Image 1 (cartoon, rainbow, N blue to C red):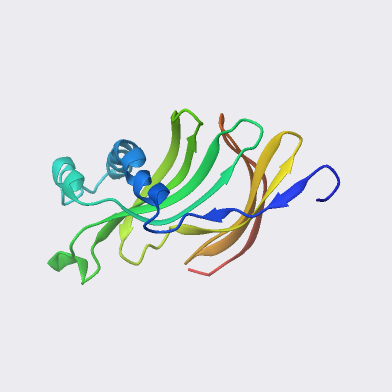
Image 2: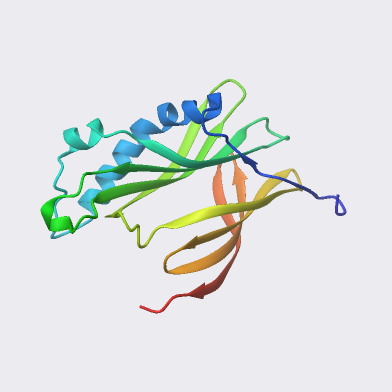
Length: 180
């Protein structure tokens, strides 16, 4: 305890646990929508797999973290999920993948709110960052997640208010970037 604030750990959702298996069910419809949005955001490129073929590919959870909000009773998850595609001859052995990341808020009655983003890349996942949770600060009736976000291109540290009404960035620090 530090003054009126407490610092708690952010739980790693264990692969194979009931919460782990529940996440793809909660995410699939949202993931399909944001993948379509990501695919159509390219102006001169068309995904080699149409929407129906994309939906037949499995959605794989790669990482998931959670922290309860003791004030509201909601639980917030941060999820990293991916859908991969087989490499085609033009892909040089590195097939496409869509990485979806974001927040899932679940209330005690099972109501779910999802905030996801998606990025279409090749298997090297350049342009995609990954979360390393550092802790949850509980202060002033709010829950703040503190985490590192890093990828091929750089590293950031962030503090977000991860409330049931949406995630809001409170502080962000860019720790560095790799050139080119």
